[in-house]
Length: 169
Length: 311
Image: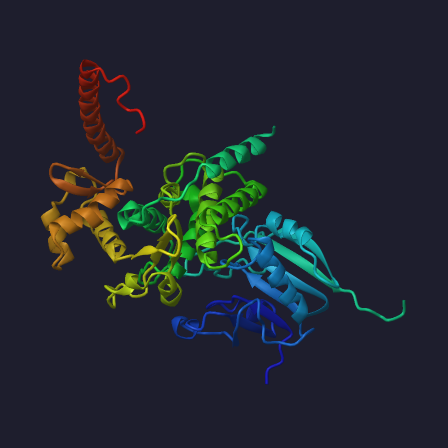
């Protein structure tokens, strides 16, 4: 059985996670991709909000150009982050790569949502940087849900810290 | 009041004016639905993407892919460059106002029955608003016809998920064949409770793509215009000229993708072509304005003070 350190959500027909964050479990909820992709790299078909993995399993969760899910509303952010922080370990990261006009992951929206929601026992710290020519992902062909070219220009990292109850109080 | 506060106040005022139609007629929104899809298609046809190799079908994947592609690449068809950042708070607030208004209008505050309708309608509205914030007042905004449907008093759910659509309206799929089976459908609700109507998109967009590409290759420019008969021959099917005109050439003309003259249809390739199209339409408008002035004169004779009142 393969041991995965990281997880990519909504991976589609790509293999981004395997190229840059290996060993990475590639997931997508669309089962048709098994046939639709020229080469299907997916390891697991599941919804990003209902992951079939135990608590504290992964060190990094990657959302590469999310569309149709993500941070568009407070409600969907709450459900997604509750699930992601469940499967992530303490001191882990959520890396989101997208275009600044992508309404599901625009940096301002993500930052706002993080302040809007409260996750029990979890602290999240937010950083954002431009993906410039020095970025290792620049040559990767990022695509939309129907195979069009998209140019992600922001990399947002959410640093996840879990507060454990030590029982010492 | 800041500029954004005044924009939000205006949006709220317009949303507060929304009412649901007392009718439930496909003819009220069908053309807007198709026009919305053709407006999206404009970007597929005019923005080159060497990555895209798929056979085109207007399903949910294509719809969402185009949505993302357009919002990210709108500058490529607009003469203006969008600002680096838009007011996402304004978009959030406007969406919330619309969501509350639809819940109140449909009297579904406490139920989840119309959740897909609320999500779909607010999603379309948000896209329209984002595009408008990037390119204020642009006629290229592909969500204008879809927002028209809302303004006509219909909330809607756009999807290719047959099971979910059939929960509301089974008859939509009665005429579906293998070609249209996975296409997008729109199901709408007006003020009539628990009653829905809808349309499954036919394959006119595939025909529009073929004809556009044919004209681009063989009828580029007004000097090379081809007749409707020649287009019909190219299509090589049993589609009538009337159908070609209604489903293909007229929508492409309305979208500004092709032009026509006395010889036939052509791809608008040069400033001269565009000028010719503009002049032809201007002449038609002037003709109509002349007719309107005659009616206004007749109104005066008949003692009607304001002929356009209530229109």
